[in-house]
Length: 79
Image (cartoon, rainbow, N blue to C red; front, side):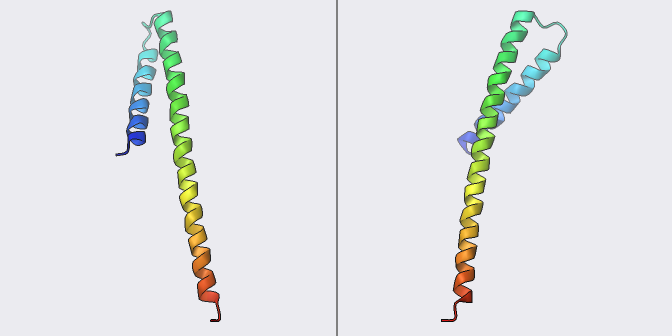
């Protein structure tokens, strides 16, 4: 597993724990606020990682489409 995937997985696990902690009715207000801030930072990180993955996917897809177009042009050539 790549480092980015592992970091994303770890971040999601931490976020899930924060959500569980915040759903507890006995959360101290200040501790809850700190956990909420941590959760927001983790969400931003996860969004960034997912955006990177999406951009990489699009780049690879575009490369395949260019290769397909080049292959089509070669097969359409009368020579």
